[in-house]
Image (cartoon, rainbow, N blue to C red; front, side, top):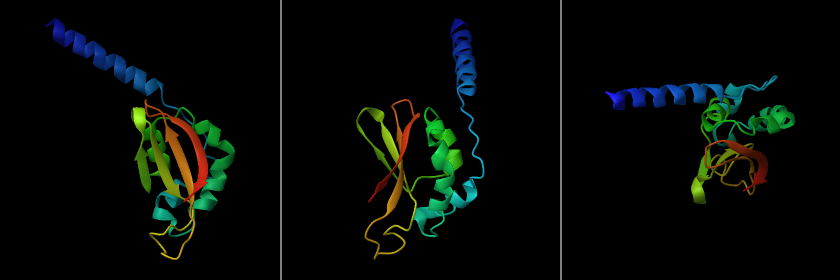
Length: 126
């Protein structure tokens, strides 16, 4: 009986903690659907949407992975590093997947810590 009480208490605390840790940010005029529907940057519409996020990208720091996923959608690529750190990659313009003649693609890179919180959003090239 004590086991069930303990389990219930732990479950209740984790629900309260997880719901209180959500971070809300004002996305202004960012259109998440346009960003999500431009897989691999093939429609070349992500970069314009990213420019709307650029002034508030520091607001993403501390956001949970699931919240970022709701905003930006599934990443085009991801990489898991040592100590459970990971990176998400979103092509901002057409990648080689869209056009094999592309020499360089611009990427939005999202770094997560071991607790699946956003550490930094940056732009790089592949």
